[in-house]
Length: 336
Image 1: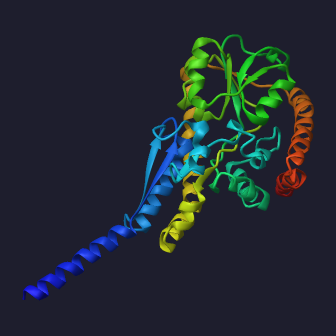
Image 2 (image 1 turned 60 degrees about the horizontal axis):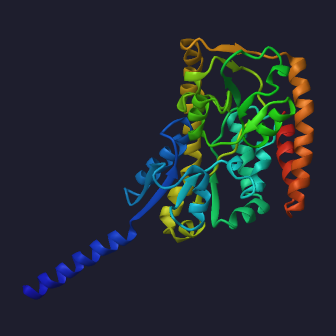
Image 3 (image 1 turned 90 degrees about the vertical axis):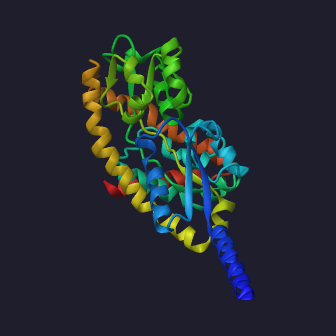
């Protein structure tokens, strides 16, 4: 009997160790707080845990693991397994995906933004670009066209932007410069303090971020239709961590991406956007709408020069920049 119990105990311990060995726990580095911008990551964690009966879990941290501008660096050294970042925060680190931040591309929906992003993410040049950081692009964080919340007198024409200090990154910043604004690149979490101190007078954001980071608490006006572009903010994973996943955990992760993105889009379109108008009204924020002629002049001044400069700069880096640009613009033209 003692011999039987001993063997049973050994077997139980072995099973326990095997179960423990099968468990996967990832750290995920985000920033700010849970909001529309992070809902796909939250949903992904939920789905993966459910599909693996809790054997694969994601511990999501909002700023506790890294600064947002250093998330790609953290991924590269394996400080955490998954992270979110925005291409415009460090264009030199991820030049391939900044094609998606060029101004006036004419993206019509979050669904189209996802389609374009995934096509660029899967391009061999982009894969190679991110390999330098031991990173694999998993999914985008699709955002609508950016518009501006500002303080003080509302602009009546585009000429009124001359000299305006505005938080605007990437291609949006380049576009704002063409109409005389003074763009400043800073992370979302720095914006409210910069407005409070007067360092900037206006902020270019998507609606969810204007609400989440408090720009509408300071703002007196908002542009309804400037629509200079958007930013591209991927979710990435450490490539080695991805490759080391057991096959069933890897499948659980990758198969959950479409549903996570669908949840994100539904939440943004139905919850965030339904709250945006009332948020402006409650604070008495003036809506500023520009004429078609002014918008056409803005696009003419900003779009082609920014695209040409991007192609030249990144071709010099060794990227197939024209191919990436043609991929994006060709998909947009085909959709029309």
